[in-house]
Length: 512
Figure (cartoon, one colour):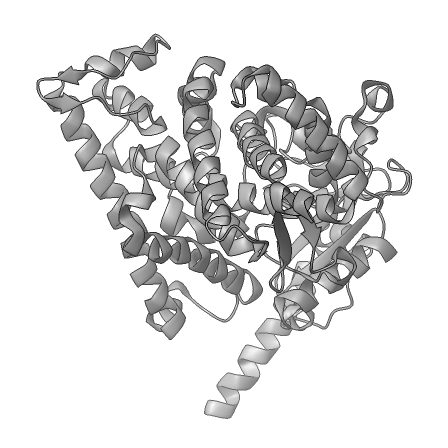
């Protein structure tokens, strides 16, 4: 009896696999070049190695199957595209704004926040949250970013000697606090014992998502929930959601006790000085306040607030840390470029009496070009995954509707057809005359089109503030070279191993 059932299952699976590849959609996908595969499982066994091995595998097939390739993961197919013309067809329209099933694994944490939602909910949330990144409000957030940069500098200067730092944990600590203060209005520096636990929880959630992406067919939701990894994920979610909910409760109570007077300032984009109100010190503006103001008009619930705050924490923490990390590694290895950045920073700070302001950051045009070039070589978000709502005609192949599309940002950023000497670090690529005739969809560090990154100006100001402070006070010297860099497959582009640079205080360097 058992043998009969097994045979029936095998026969049914083979018939289903045959059917899958002979539907219209299956035939169209199979015309696209792809990874080698086996019946039923497709190429799934090829992506069961380490995250570093998976990264190298995808990069290899990205090049030899240029500019498009497919991968079957069991019964599910995904198509990777990297040509700007094809990317434009997906990004430059509201037809294909739905994220693919890959992001479903984030929903346990983020629910239907701005990153994962679609349709009218995404449109309404985008409209609601856009004012949080208005120039006037960003100027108020800038104080937090500069203060965090000052903390970072102080921590490096405590020894008064050159110091070698593992960049990822060092930078993540400060970018996490910066986004926590701007999103929630609370400093993790006042919660030192909790800070590392919270940072580790965010990092762990990324690992859980990658684990589910690599092995989606091995687990039902129930089996995963009962597995050791699933139980650990549940504990992690309790930490993340519990902290956000606590901050929301306390922030709402604060606004009730102050009569909601500061919520009106948000609506009018007006900044007020710190004052005492009925014995309560005025709190700093936070993105959370905008959401609380909307909740008072019955636009959103506490769960809606939580999912957006959690989304800000996820999107605004690691991405910026990795952006600064790779920029520092590049500047460390290119002393001539680093010196030119330092000269620009010193001149701008001299004009502003040694202070960083929004105006001075805007005047750091060469540093901005360096950051843009760094994000070209090492885009923090190295791919986007969408579900196309209708058939797309690419250059050589047709992609059927409802196919998982991987938009290969890392690949198009290093495409020699659009970037001469693509592996060379050259900030002058972003001079106006160099950009003039460039395809507008061959550079996508913040995506493009209607669903582009809502916080890209915030991210650029944060990266500028951190790097300007570091370069002003330290010479950055290489320790781990980029030629030895190994990258691992993850939601965010990140090194597969610790990467270090040496921070040498400028006075110490000059004394020698």
